[in-house]
Image (cartoon, rainbow, N blue to C red; front, side):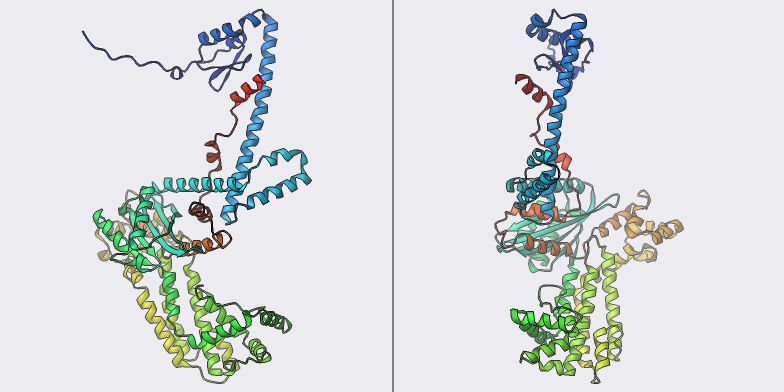
Length: 614
């Protein structure tokens, strides 16, 4: 006896039956969404088969409608079809209005989150909309009343948008050839450590994606091991491997940069276990630059300046009178800024403003019976002018390092340029040439006393020393950066073996040399044929992904302090993360996709059933 496999049951959906036009007049049905809809009772016949349709008609409607024949039957069919069409149009309009109201709710929530505004502002925005509608188009009041902008709704919408942006980044990360990380940790108003982790990835087409990959609230310890766990979870979430990691840029804290128990040490161990090359490690260049400035011994200038500024600004009466005085004498500036140590550019701005208002400040202090003798001391004024110029010079360098999607070669070029400029200015200052130091030049025209060369020499010496020490990690990668910046100007014998033959071909190709001169670096490497320059393209993709600084982390940390202020200290970690994702992303939210996943719209067939029952 032979055993045969039991046949699988047929599925009616897979039979692909076609609707026949004559069924409409015979059984009063019409086709809707691939199913037969009875025009008499609004029931749907699941299987598009004449036997099923005929049985439904004979069972429920034959006794009442079988006597209709000919023209009378055709007229009845047309009437039923017209009624159904009218009802479908009505409910389609309701569905579209509901969808539009939901989309408006999503877009308003997106704007609120992007600007870091409270969720409760949604109700205020709706009140403003209602006022505008009352005056301009009162007949559409019901339509605007359907827009939901309550606090809970806005919070829920922000969560949905944050999830959508994360999903977009996950899809992008699947195509990364290389990626790099930038990390920074700061403390919010509730003393919770917020770990920001930005990712810059490059795919095979040299498309650069720079996004906030994760933001983690660390309520316990913030050791290197704790931070490494968050990094591991992020890699798992985005399906990334250790052998794709090109560089890690940190804020320089011991828990981050430590090669033993710090984050960097844990990453080195993970890469060894994965049998892949260690990534580059860079201490944020902007942090290094700021630390160079902090090591300069300008206390003899800065302390009297800060003390005087605080005397004027910290007392309300003094501050009002000082501003009125500046207005009366038509001074160039209306006020003095406070000095804030944590702000990168604060020292330079305060010193420059103090120098430019020194005459007005001296008069005001004398009137207040609190004279500052140093304002009459020409040696101290020279130091003030020099300090204002040198800090302004450092501020200009700082601004060059800031920005998004800055290539590592551009950053290193700025560092090399600053070193050469510093050497030039030092030689000029030592010979009393102040062509690049405007404050010193101004004072030179006003006083006859000699410039304090010894004071300036000590400052220059310390600044050069700090720059040499603190940018050593960039100097160690100078060769890699140089050959990436200009592959036509490198020595073949000094290249890694996997690049030598391709770079020879490149240097001999005059057409590609012309493209190199015409395009930016990313576009140039993108135009290289992948079959001929695969290794060189991969080499370039890795260096394009490198972060030169944690500028994005610092910028986002400032926004955290604005969003999670003393008035919103109860903001949950999830909502804060969603707000930061929305506020820092380059992706546009996929509103239509989010709406398509919602089930709060009325289905046309359900609507017709409801109408018939009524």
